[in-house]
Image (tube, rainbow, N blue to C red; front, side):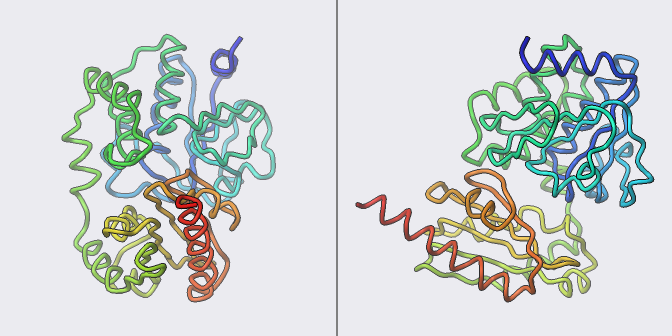
Length: 327
């Protein structure tokens, strides 16, 4: 029996499931969680979805988004016999699972740096998004994919491939999305909500961030900064910085782009690579994780100290990759 079948048995056996998604939820985490919840409900089960942070406003078109409960106290969480954590490489992004909750814990993810923190670990690094794994799970389960599910899964794959621009976009990704469109997803609707529904404050914040552009390694490394003061001045939040890191990445000659965003406890660093550098390894060395081309970490350091620590590390890694290429 393969792992998909084992997990399906657990889903069929339980009266309900508690679903957790990571801090700063993205389209993949949200789309995957909402689809799984709808699948459970279709089988007469209960489902609760919890997240440390609120659903970003530009994802509030997703069917059922209001079911996602923002909680920061464990006593506010209801644990069913089955707990599912989605799209999270480690427990650092799922605070309520660090204490090992009652019941069986299922880990469904696509990050290569996943630490296999569950009792059952359905981890497929070859998948472009966790949404692809959920799609396969529903197929093996024999469930009908409704237009609402199709919209959520399409959003999961679309956003985690950067609108099919990133190097993780595969033939399978495009085939899945082709099928999801036939099942009721609207590419126009998803793209409009995700990329063309930003607030004026976000545009002002982007302007401030782009003014901080710095470069190193003869133009091979570029980064921008978002401070808490900038967000306060523009009336924005952390969700408004999504995709910011792709602006320095778009500069000709840049191999690695970085976004340093101040948080309450330090700095969140986002890494993007055009392929020469495996940024997941850099992020992992700093306590984070991710993919070869997209990764991140949280650092309990002042902003300037974080920059001074991360940038030289990226420069050194890029230099090693460049020298090995020409050796």
